[in-house]
Image 1 (tube, one colour):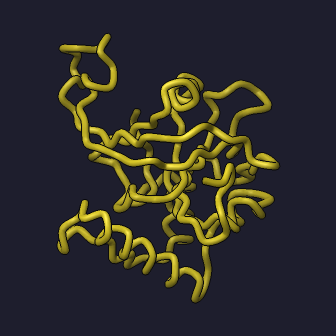
Image 2 (spheres, helix red, strand yellow):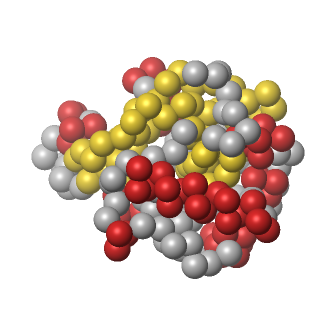
Image 3 (cartoon, one colour):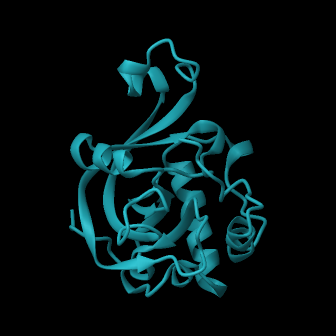
Amino acid sequence: MSTLPQPHDLVLVAFLPDPRDLEIARLLGWYRIPLRTAPRVVAVDWLAFYQPGSFPEGQRWQVQYCAAVQGHELVTREQLFKDEAGGPKAGHEYFKISLGPLHALPQAIPAGTWKRLTFLYTTGDRLLAAAHLGDLGVHDEERQVLFQALRERAKEKQQYSAVHQPEFPFDPELLAYISMQGGGSAYFRESGS
């Protein structure tokens, strides 16, 4: 597999709560998404990580790293963090996304005015060409191609029933704007670690 996404690869840009989570991805090779706030499709080719204000100066409010997705499974928080056994969130369910090695993007993608991004679907070519997060948005007929690819991926992985297959009834840019304004949505909301 390539060390960076290919042009037509499906990419999920995901919120990385804090530097500890970057270390988990780098050293242990996984990322977690709470089931209750997960985007509709997690069966993508790559994850790219949005680093919020919890990161040190020079690393915050940007996408700097990506990793190839090798698979996913549904687990409990207790299975992810053995030291939290019996804690209040121990039984909460998470998608555990298995990752290949972390790769730095050729250039970090600054957030600009997008400070509250949580999940955003894009393509490999957009990820590698973006000058800021707003460039990751998919427009016009390209959006329909992306959404069709996501629906096909959901069917292919047989993870989702027909009732739960993504329909994407809203414009992704509108959803991203709502998220930036703090409104949140089913596709773009704080992950709540």
